[in-house]
Image (cartoon, rainbow, N blue to C red; front, side, top):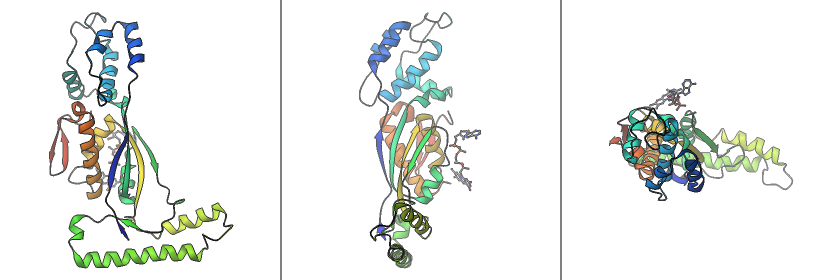
Length: 261
Ligand SMILES: Cc1cc2nc3c(=O)[nH]c(=O)nc-3n(C[C@H](O)[C@H](O)[C@H](O)COP(=O)(O)OP(=O)(O)OC[C@H]3O[C@@H](n4cnc5c(N)ncnc54)[C@H](O)[C@@H]3O)c2cc1C
């Protein structure tokens, strides 16, 4: 058994091509809006959300759409109004990609239940052989010596059994065809615990992130997924504070001011 800790790496975020955006805005008379924007490294997701929202009403300047006499020029105010008015579809344009490392199959199974606005690439335990059993123990479990002794012995036995099966099936002998390795590796994973640590690449847009952060940090959610989504939430609040700044955090539960946008 190899003790591990679930980790979250944010590996990709949106990047605006401001040149192309400017070219479009020149066409529709909205260049001034672009001039007012901050364009720092972390501004693109929020700028993209505002851009998508402004396209809807041609709200770059008063008068471009005769029905629009006033426009909101303040970026923070504009995005707050998007959340308040539940205009969440504009948040779907900005996606973030995370590596969820050393999460268990318990957590990954729950994460893939979230469907709209996500993309998943999960480590295949049909292809990737378990030569050890990486495993996360929560703090309360680590403080229980008898539990740890018995759990560790059980996991060590499972680990030995994985190695025994690999040897028994001759998987490392020369000339074993890959389909045979795959067939047996897939069988072998059935004898690993649900808590075995593995990993996935998980992409979600901002609308989905807001919903999943709330659902999966709820006190009723499972403890590992709460830990993982707490980390995702911290990252997102730093990435896009105007779109994740309305959460109140109490005992690890992230509750937004504006629900289900
Ligand atoms: C605390 C907790 C306990 C849970 N316990 C269980 C359990 O015991 N058993 C179990 O099976 N699952 C359980 N789940 C999983 C839960 O039922 C959902 O499947 C999961 O949380 C995905 O969330 P979602 O339904 O909001 O869908 P998502 O896929 O995250 O979709 C987001 C939203 O899009 C809309 N949407 C998505 N798909 C559709 C659709 N097909 N039709 C209409 N609207 C749609 C809904 O408004 C939905 O809320 C639990 C989840 C939590 C957070």
